[in-house]
Amino acid sequence: MAAVGLLAGACTTTGNVERNAAGGAALGAIAGAVIGNNVGDGDAGTGAAVGAVIGGAAGAIKGCREDGGCGAVSNRRQYYDEAAGRYYYYDQVSGRYYWEDGRPR
Image 1 (cartoon, rainbow, N blue to C red):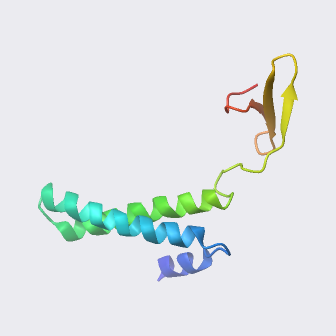
Image 2: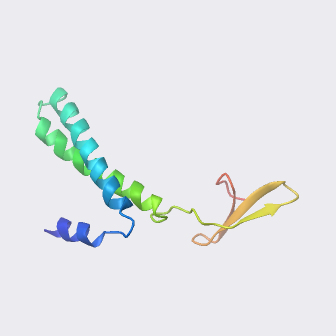
């Protein structure tokens, strides 16, 4: 019941999280069933359940990042360093400057 409440509260306006979570769960269940059937006890049901949980979580994180959350930074202002001839940006979360490739400036 707690998981249902958590999932209901995680709804987004774009639906990316939900679609990616459902797709990830489906792919994870299929992969888990195949792996579970061929490895260990040969229990496809347990493999499908584990695969669905892992795939659903991975899909939800992917959808959250597509929406700009979960640590994704898609809307950042870049600055140009004339001496280095490169662009850099300021990360408001960490308070640090980074080159456009993600390395600290």
